[in-house]
Length: 151
Image 1: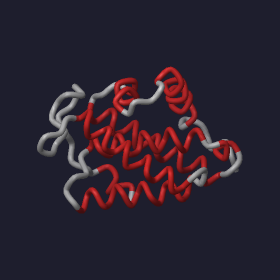
Image 2: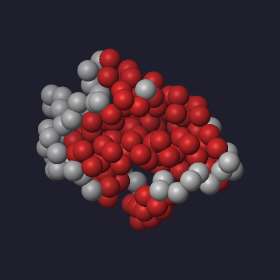
Image 3: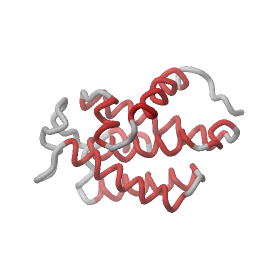
Image 4: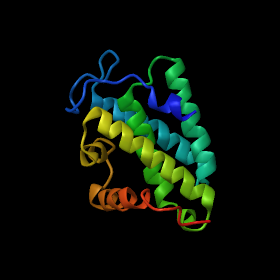
């Protein structure tokens, strides 16, 4: 399953206003499209990270099947998923909740690096309060280097 997540078509790297990989799109609009799709998942899932993950992975696979699964879309989908999963209070007490947040962070980090886009630019493209999100990003960069907090 992880291999499918990492084999999405890449858009041109670097600039948020470069082509997004499908007609009439930019990397920015594809990131937003992914973030909006995840927001629908978050509404369905509430605080349940496992339900969130199920919905996000289904959205990922559906977009791949429809040939609209650009790397920028996946970045928006998983970045937004990570923001919601990492903000869940259950991340501190449930293994499955932390696992989802870790997976979404890893996938977001991978796509950010592949596209050559700074995480702060991704945050801005998803229209988050980056003063709050970017400290979380830096915390999770360290956190994924350590064993899981919840056993």
